[in-house]
Image (tube, rainbow, N blue to C red; front, side):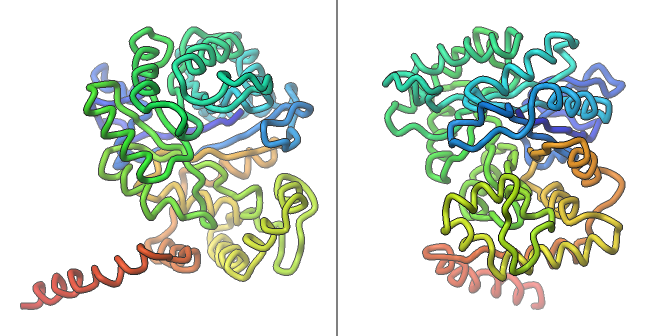
Length: 379
């Protein structure tokens, strides 16, 4: 289960909004808009079943009681956005959210979930984005969530075994049936996302409104293409793993190997993971965030989250917290302070990802355009 706390700019109205909220004017009802110019606020918590884990084999993080405590505190602080997936804990996470949600006023909360992966039964048709799998999965998710609709239903990954038209028409049918309010996707490449947007528009179907993607100071690869599609097509970005399994909390120092938590688990199962993360670039980023955080009395995690929240393409951020203490720290990334443009640039520079062909080639070839523009300004 993932929880997002979202802040809004009242007075901004758009034809495309996810759900409603009160702003003092009955004409303004936009909650999560997929226009990237709309900025939201802080975002929080991931809790998983302590025994079920998920489809990756990763152990769960916290049980139902602690999850409900975290949810309660999150809502007390103004949170209203819950993101989960059927495959998290093989349904356990949706059940945790559902048991809490059935005691609440449903219309006050945004519920998002996902579909794509096998739920453990290894039946051939119970996987992917076919009409059969999507329609059976949404009904199962609604039962676990104890609700008759979800606000945002997301394709958890691309499915090259199903025609895109079938997938999009099925999602559209769910919107028309009232089971789903809006449609999003997750973990898509640039060409997959562009094809999805174009096909949906060509068929006259309900549009895709968001992309949930891994994005952090350590993972900026999606800036090359997927986020450019989002900016040109008006999709909002919801970053997942913004602290990179806890590495961007600053708890792991240069030269250390993590042994606990998500990062300890992931490093333990693959040497490649350790090699790709535990390097000079990573610790240069962490140490830079420490220096900036010290100026504001903020943690490394808060600086890393604040950097994301100030990115134009980002609508809201999905954050994992296993304890109430982590929740409170994550909340500190929200309103009340901002990074200066100079500090954003420093973080951009230290975290610049390696540029490979054709991106490095295109950057160099576009310099002539930029230079001509600069020269024309001085004529």
